[in-house]
Structures are given as C-alpha cells and as structure tokens.
Amino acid sequence: MEVKLISHTPEPEKVVAAAARLCYSPKSGSDIMEGFSEQDVEKFLQRLVSLGHTSPFEHASFTFSIDGVSRALSHQLVRHRIGVSFSQKSQRYVKEKAFAFVIPDAIQKDDALKEKYLAIIDDLQGKYNELLELGIAPEDARYILPNAASTNLIVTMNARSLLHFFELRCCTRAQWEIRKMANLMLREVQAVAPHLFAGAGPTCVSMDLCFEGDMCCGRTKNVVKRGKGTGEQG
Ligand SMILES: Cc1cc2nc3c(=O)[nH]c(=O)nc-3n(C[C@H](O)[C@H](O)[C@H](O)COP(=O)(O)OP(=O)(O)OC[C@H]3O[C@@H](n4cnc5c(N)ncnc54)[C@H](O)[C@@H]3O)c2cc1C
View 1 (cartoon, protein in one colour):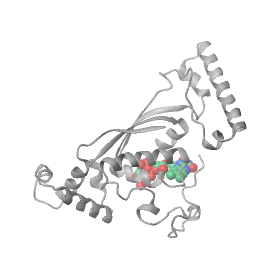
View 2 (cartoon, protein in one colour):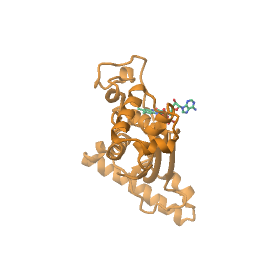
View 3 (cartoon, rainbow, N blue to C red):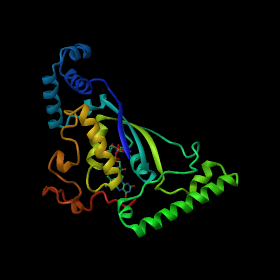
View 4 (cartoon, rainbow, N blue to C red):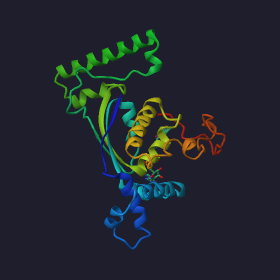
C-alpha cells in the first residue's frame, strides 16, 4: 500500500481560520488573509476544534494518491459520501491479465494458508485470462476477480470530512487495511496542517470517549453504552 498526499489547498490552515474569522468581522476575506499571523491562525484553529465549530474546515481540501489497496478496501472507502471525490482504476478499461492482489497478514504469516490462497488467486487469474481469450470483454470477465485484487485511486476530501473519516477509520473497530490507510493519510496531512489535524483520530484520542458501546476496545473507560456499535459485517 502506498499513500501520498499529492496536492492540497495552499495555506490550508490560514484559509480555514480566515473563513471562521470572517463570520465575526466587518473585513473582507482577502483583508483577513493578509493580516493573519501564524500565532493567530493557531489560536483560532484550537478554538474552532474545542467548540466543535468545524464547518470552516470544509474550505481546505487534500488530494491523495492511494495505490495497491484491495477492492475490499475501496468498497469500504466509497461509503464515505460527504465532501469526498474518488477516481478509481477501471476494471472495464484496464485488463487484469496479471492482476496484483493483497494478502491479509493473517494469511501471509501462515505458510500453508498462504500457499492455498496463492493457488486460488492463480486459478482465478487463469480463468479470467481464459475468458478474455474466449472473446469475453474485460468488463464481463472481471466478474470473477476477487476482492483481493488491488486497485489505485485518487481521493480528495475536505478537512471536515477527513476528521470524520479519521474518527471512524483510525478506530480499532475498522478493518486492518482501511485503518492502515487512514493512519497513513493522517500522517500525511498532519505534516502539512498540524493544527487542523492536531486532535484527529478515533474519538478515544480526540475526546477520550468511545461510541462503540459493548464493542469498545478498552482504550478509554468513557464508553457510551448504546448497543453494539457500528457492527462490522461486510
Ligand atoms: C467499524 C465500521 C463498521 C462498518 N460496518 C458496516 C456494515 O457492516 N455494513 C454497512 O453497510 N456499512 C458498514 N460500515 C459503513 C458505515 O455504515 C458508513 O457507511 C461509513 O462509515 C461512512 O460513514 P458516514 O455515513 O458517517 O460518512 P459520510 O457518508 O461521509 O457522511 C458523513 C455524515 O453526513 C451525514 N449524512 C450523510 N448522508 C446522509 C443522509 N443520506 N441522510 C442523513 N445524513 C447523512 C451523517 O451524519 C454522516 O455521518 C461500517 C463502518 C465502520 C467504520
């Protein structure tokens, strides 16, 4: 898996702080941008986060190149609908004649399981190539490809959506692969916007509170008891 921040709003922290200050100022946005010191920006962002006033965070966007993740992960990723844009390698237009695939750690570390897994992948690859040779279009042959098949995406999210995404997907309740990706994304954005993402992560980190009820991993004692949490099944 490779996760790289390839682009972002210039001066993301200043833009967010200026958007928030504009609400309480007679000045124009451009005047506020010009007169904003780094210390002011930092103080403003801390206040916004502590108040939970995160709508100004929507003015900063971050674009990631994400390579070598499974289609199982991308199914989970695209469930995030708000303030997010996706572009994904097409299995209709790109033939998968030697498809790359992800091996879960639990299988990777067991030689016998890994051998079995690789044999299944090899079999599917052979069957896929056979369908292409029979004249089946890639868009139809792909129906037999596994969730393990790896994919590449470009994903853009605004900072408010990212905070929500990190709450859900950096949590130990999220599946290992998307959690790993979310943590890599978090590291990337913290490098360029440390104050925007200072408290980002699962709610046990950001507010010492867990909403997973009985499914809490135990990292905090402050658990909201409201049933069985998000309940990963798929
Ligand atoms: C640990 C875990 C386990 C999961 N298990 C399953 C599972 O078993 N099955 C499954 O189907 N999904 C599962 N999901 C996916 C989950 O249900 C969400 O679809 C996904 O996390 C996206 O979250 P979201 O809707 O909050 O994000 P976004 O789509 O980005 O939405 C952000 C917020 O906007 C609001 N919003 C968005 N759309 C609407 C709308 N139409 N109406 C009203 N408000 C809206 C909500 O407040 C929402 O939280 C799981 C997720 C996690 C983290």
